[in-house]
Amino acid sequence: MTANPATLPGYTPVIDGATRLGVVHLTARNLPRLVAFYRDRIGLRVHRETPDFAALGAGGEDLLHLTGNPEAPRVDRAAGLYHFCLKVEDRRDFARWLAHLVATHTPLAGLVDHRFAEAIYLDDPEGNGVELNWDRPRSEWPDPSVVIRLGNAALDVEGLEGLLTDAAPWEGVPADTTVSHIHLHVGDLGAAERFYTEVIGFGRVMEMPRQAVFTSAGGYHHHVATNVWKGRGVPAAPEGAAGLTSYTITVPTRADRDGVLARARAANVTVAETTAGPSLRDPSGNAIVLAVETN
Image 1 (cartoon, rainbow, N blue to C red):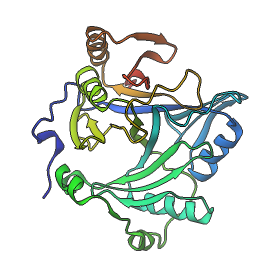
Image 2 (image 1 turned 90 degrees about the horizontal axis):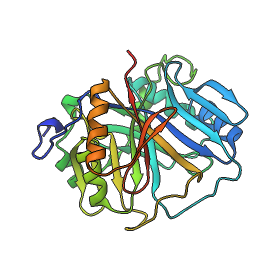
Image 3 (image 1 turned 180 degrees about the vertical axis):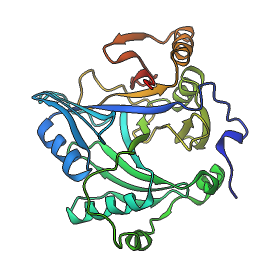
Image 4 (image 1 turned 90 degrees about the vertical axis):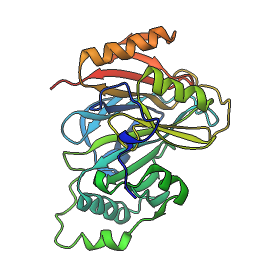
């Protein structure tokens, strides 16, 4: 059974369907080590670099910002990043990605078929979760209830290896690589769902009852997922902690951004002005920058 999440009962996004995620910003205790990992293992290109900052991507817009702070506190039990996901459009590129990670002896945390996407899971050297994926065509996505009921399947590694015949040598991620989604630890699942649906304006796609909720724009399988796997009531991470600093939601127009800001103010959510754009925090303190498409 297949279904477009946009037609599911209860899926009522307010935000424009072309909304997507943009740059993810991490604070690093050892900046050179993280730059090397994302460049040499993940395959991102270094767009700009200073002694305490690096911007990386696939040659176009930035996908990852790293700010170095050797004194940044490490906090284990707090809200924050579970993982962020980088996506390629061609399954052959996904196969080459996996082959490169294996060839470089990069430790992997999981190889999973989510039924709507194939995924590789790993952690960077500071424990930030990273997912690398390839989405199946939307026409092949199962109904989310099927995904929840059946769970994940094993990744078809043999099938991926078959795509490597005559494949071009690995030269880093392709230019169409994007940030697909982000998955966050939160302290209150209900409050997080209300924030991402009522303030941001995403629709709820699926849930793991009392564990995790998946939300998106435009019928995507998820742009932002939230979970309570670190425990209900976990506090926000302290300001300046290592790990997730912020992530970006990019909307098509200024009117779309103004709509989010209006809903935020109506819900008494504080909006801060930053050099990257207006910023707000979800109820667990995860920071979001609102950006507008530039083309």
